[in-house]
Amino acid sequence: MKKATKTAVPEKAPVVKKAPVAKKTPAKRATTSAVPTPTKSPAETPAPVPVPATGVVAGVDVGFGNQLFIRGEGPGLSWEQGVLMECVSSDSWTWSTKSASRPFAYKVLVNDEQWALGDDFIAEVGVQNTISPAF
Image (cartoon, rainbow, N blue to C red; front, side, top):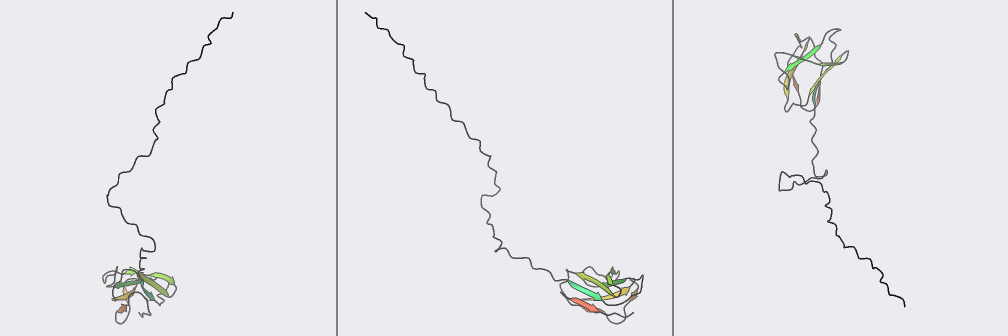
């Protein structure tokens, strides 16, 4: 007779549960205000209003080597010392400002020494004031 042999039944390994791995999330930034700041769309933001330039154009030939200056009571001007005007051609000189808020008196001088003849000129705001001074 055959002897009954027991076959070894393998034992089940105990089930070990792994601990869940924590996901790394970026740190939250601290906010400076508890109240949310409303944002405006570009259509709601008003466009800046351009400031019109007030200019002086003097049409005069002051001779080679000479320069034309402007003095007055306008922004950036004084009656004591002139501001050099820009020579744009042999007989055209310019000066401009965006700071004028009202008309102002001015006068031009050759080499900041020789005053133009006649009364003071009055600059209108926001336009090119063209003059033809005589010396």
